[in-house]
Image 1 (cartoon, rainbow, N blue to C red):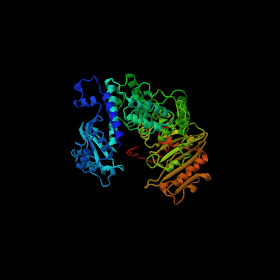
Image 2 (cartoon, rainbow, N blue to C red):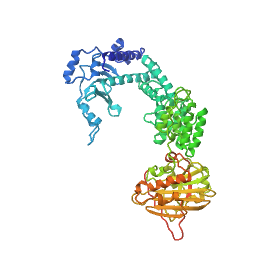
Image 3 (cartoon, helix red, strand yellow):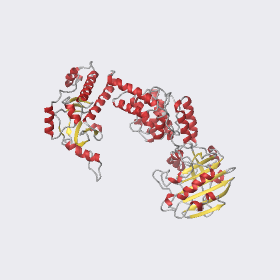
Image 4 (cartoon, rainbow, N blue to C red):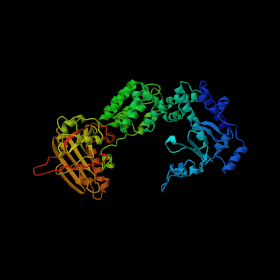
Length: 637
């Protein structure tokens, strides 16, 4: 803001809105004595500084003032009530060098390291060289820095107060600072008027509220980016609805910082959709109960009771997102697809039904509650969140975005292309043909009572294994996730097995699983730099092993009639770097082609599949054999 006319119209509007917002019925003793004149004149400023006064200030300082501050002084030589915490801002007489009188350079940024950032270098020198503009304030420093200058000659403004409990806030120029203080005035006045039972309304608030409503329509029509920008602007002025609406957009884009949904949390109409999102954050970050109460402050008892029940369900993993009408039916269908690992199909189902989605009320923009669902939430990546937001819904019209590519890669080779499990990337699995996933516990479960459990994290599965009072210390049972492995196949897979592969005692669960059908068993232990990698593959049919091979380092041991497509000598080649797992990738690609199978990466890595404890993958000790069990704690396991 460098034009006099622009400053004048801005400051006049601010002054008049401030004057109109003062409670005329308030006792005189509740108003500051210095406010009587600006209230009577409806002007927060002072007479304009003459050119001579501005030049005298520049001569005293030894600097030409930055354009926006210089022009401001030509309209008003100082300012009252710059936001809520600066009661008097310096004009030409009061502006002075700060000279680090508060001693804050010791704390911000503190002692610089050997490779400081440019921002830290600027901040380190700012306290000594800055021009102090706050004259009367609530402990808030307003510092104009001649060492932080942009291409237009504007000096950055830094603001700091002890009660902020954070580093200084930077503004690009004095003009930007004043615009922020104007927004702060609006935001604080909005809260104050609501508290006092008054209405704070003027031309600015009416225009902002109209922009909120237009942004809501834009968001429902798929134009979420301009909608988000308009809502952010309105929220900075404290306008009702703006933050709650924008937080829905932010959450679907994967943002969680300062996403609170404001009044929607305690509104009985929207709470069932919004509360699960806060509950999921609360549970995942192990927050204290007081944080939960903070979200629900002011809520009716019925809302609090319902919210506590939602929190319980989220904590136990039993929460399920629901919706009405056609979209609700699509949610049920998608959940069934995701239940067995076909998350891409589940997303396609949800995406296709988006035009049929209907909001709960005028402050509801999208099915944001999906994010809290333990089965469907992991499907909503930030990219898919953008796709959802860009799709017209609730009866709005517009062009839908081009569908994103599926997230799950085809086949099996992705198992060896990265470290999806976090440590080394070891895994073992059984593929069974023409058998429903729900039947696998009956074929290879630990006993006749084995059932499918709720999805479990790796840590939970480890604790479940260790807490099993019936397990024998020699037994190597897997805690396996269950799902579909393509057309006509099911799988049970355990990432990061607790036991190492032992060829002398290994018993393939695929033999039992293959009764009346075929089963494939794979166990991979990549090299850790100290121990050679191991890769085992075996195929059984009708309870009989047909063929198998085990590759340990460069050694290959096989039995049975191995098809040429799976011949380990073709895939594990001399000279392959052991850490790159090239042979393993090749045989996994061949296995996927040979049997037409695949494994769902997203469902497995995000732990959304049901699981069960299998029978042992090893035999008991024989006569004369002993064993020893050693427990080693590994962080994160």
